[in-house]
Length: 178
Image (cartoon, rainbow, N blue to C red; front, side, top):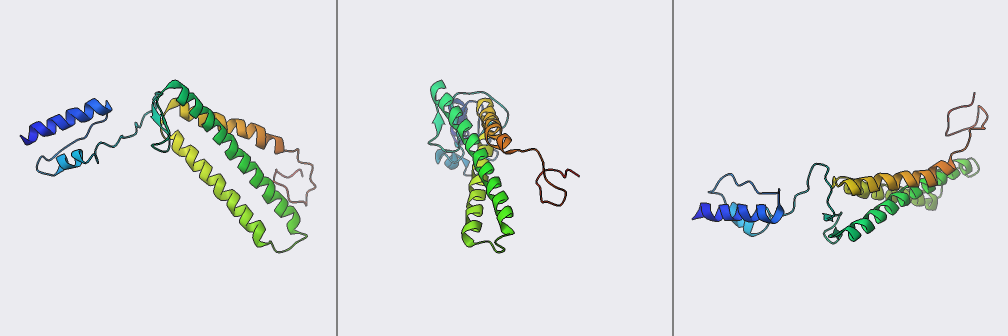
């Protein structure tokens, strides 16, 4: 009786989740209750690159079920990548201004420090979200992250690179011209 219920539960899991299944090793343990409580029925992420228009992105509420939802999600992820590079660019310009003005104002105010910390927190938060999206191993979502970061870099970072026209004694971000 126990084994037939367990076999039915395994069959149910295979039918519900395709390739995902629960491995139940010891029939004396209380694994059947875990299956009934759906602790083993949580949808495991596929750990190889795959392409599917049905995907859960970051949260259960952000789920794509058709091509249109998937396409909109990819566009949003591209915008997230661009926004991340925008924050990076703003933070770099802010730090450059701080370095330039630090000679005039020796001690930094708490407002300047807090602004820099908040920009850095936002930058890392966005990067970790994009990393988690890339770790879904969905080809479309992965390339949306790469495309978004690349477009953002092209727009916000490449425009801020200037030719190094500094003197040898000045403090430059680029290699010395001497």
